[in-house]
Length: 259
Image 1 (cartoon, rainbow, N blue to C red):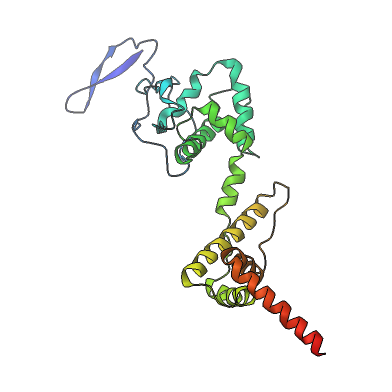
Image 2 (image 1 turned 180 degrees about the horizontal axis):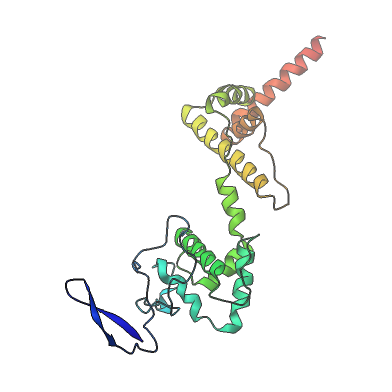
């Protein structure tokens, strides 16, 4: 191939030099930060491999013995998605199928192709979830997918993102007082009231998140605040509750006898 020779002063030489270019060039890599840890949410950016030659020669695959250790969990780095490029061909479709189970509604661009852009992007998402999920933190990709295929991530994410409406603690004060007075003849202590407000909020949260998943089944709505307070009063002071019930019974009986 004939190319113009550039002089040191930047001007083109009037003469040309015949130069034979090599038949192949070394694949160009995209600059990366191999120590960047995937965490705090999902990984975003270019979904493709980013390397003309496939696996980045500068990337060091983690030792498999580092995975699945809950006492010293491995945290995936941004370039660790390349683990899938070493996956045996016979496992590729099964891996993508489990990704579809873990992320309902998602589909790969090409089933059976491991360097598929959509698959790579979703693996990056998966690594972000693993790094931030205490239940499965440090697990290898396949073990994590076994778990998430039974506990779909998009369902969990939707539940966590959904706003939860809680009853204002001030609005709970009066019904809690009525419930306690009716059962034990006195109100709760400030410490007991604070604890019951927290428990009631947990019940409301559990109900709303259970209803938001749309996964079917039955979810139980929280009780009326006064009824909740009455039940808790019986548990906190069973003796006083029985005494109040006895007193109420005698009062009713006296009225009947007088009437």
